[in-house]
Amino acid sequence: MKRLGRDTLSSVRAFTKTPAYDRAATRIGFAHIGVGAFHRCHQAEYNEDALEAGADDRTEIGVNLRPPSIENQLTPQDGLYTRLLVEGEETEARVIGSIRNVLDAERDHAAAVTALADPGIDVVTMTVTEKGYCHIPSTGALDWQRPEIEEDVRRSAGRLSLPGFLAEVLARRMASNAPVTLVSCDNIPGNGHILKTVVSDFVEADDRALHAWVADNVRFPSTMVDRIVPATRPEDLKRAEELTGLRDEGVVVGETFRQWVVEDDFNRPPPRWDFAGAEFVGDVEPYEFIKMRVLNACQSALSYLGALAGLGTTYDDVSDPLLRGFVERMILSESAAVLPDVSDMQVAPYLKLTLQRLANPAIRHTNHQIATDGSQKINQRILQPLRERMAKGLASPLLEAAIGGWVAYLAKSQPAFGAAWQAHDQIMPFVVETARRASGDLDAFVRLFVGNRAIFGDTLADDPRFAARIVTAARAMAADDVRKALGAAMDETAPGVMV
Ligand code: CS2
Image (cartoon, rainbow, N blue to C red; front, side):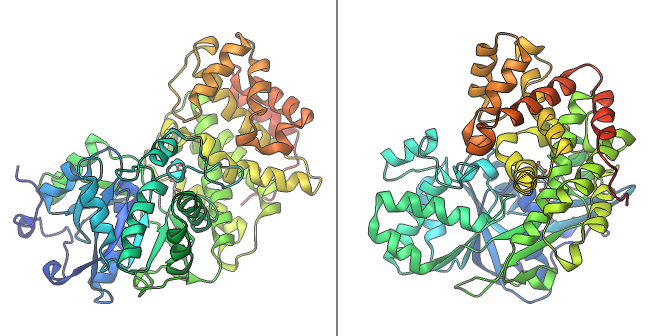
């Protein structure tokens, strides 16, 4: 079977949409760092819609700082790839053309820096996952102890951490006086602020002139991005092949729902994502809080509790009335009290929509994928609402049960507690060491774990009553019957208003 590319585009089967604009007439005005499945299914599609509408003439160059290689996937296809949207039995295929060129910085670092330093680039978006910012989750400051930061501090070129790489790009842009807007599209509250902090901290230590130039010439708007896009599976490649008639190594699959709220703070002509339904607003924070404390919190809680219950995907989790009831209750009777008020994101309808999205049988988002990097996610999804409730004198047994589930999940990845699965998180060395110190005693493991200040922050790490409650919750969640433990946790709380 022939492979998707410029030369085969015209043979794509009729019912698949292909770019209707003249790709050759576009100019590369955007760059994106981290061309993973999420980017290809979200920002690149908004760009595509703006191009189709004739509202923008800018395509992008995509750069990956680390594996997987984006060049192997997309260069032979001239940047083209198939985006599938799946809902129940329905599948819609579309070939997207808004990525013109891609580069792997690990293969040719100088070319990647030169591409992003081009004064013709107005906006650089990025999706590098929460850990890519190299910040301390509980404070937002640059974590100078991260190995990739320590390495980048020692070199003046060839830097591969996000702050280090951007410092090189910005130094080149300063030399040609080319202001730019850097747009973080990761699930971190105040993502623009975090990006600004890690970049400014890094360059301040390195180059004071650059630090001053960045303050005056670089904007860091925050954004809230949303679409569920699990890792692509081999059967998705087959499905795309059936629909388009062409082989494609760059297929991505997502749900139909999408949302993008962008802080209106650009120093170059802003992208016309509004033509695709994106909202430009003065303050993104309330939207971020609602999305992370409802959708993402449900996903994370379900991933740990579902894995502990022996389930495979979010879909399996929400199909279980007890697990579904648990997250519903957790949001309504606990997180809801610390959610901002956004008129079109009221908690009851938003939660209802969230649960509908999670129950889409065509999306198979594995619990272990969502469980990955919990140390970078738990703060904005579960811990921060809990802290805010504590400050108001409110108890949070269900949020604590979810935290207990997380700690039990990590413990059970260790040989001393059964090696039930492999957990992936940058804190795994700490988990291994904590399991060693606990010598097979789960309560001791949890107590030591909760003392980690970088994750829990000083107030919770120093609170023995909080530690005791998480010990009880984790013990219950690690026991054989997770459902029974969830039922018991719910019995102790008053039901919220069910949607
Ligand atoms: C998920 C997110 O893997 C995860 O942590 O919770 O990727 C989630 O699917 C997106 O934020 C949805 O917009």
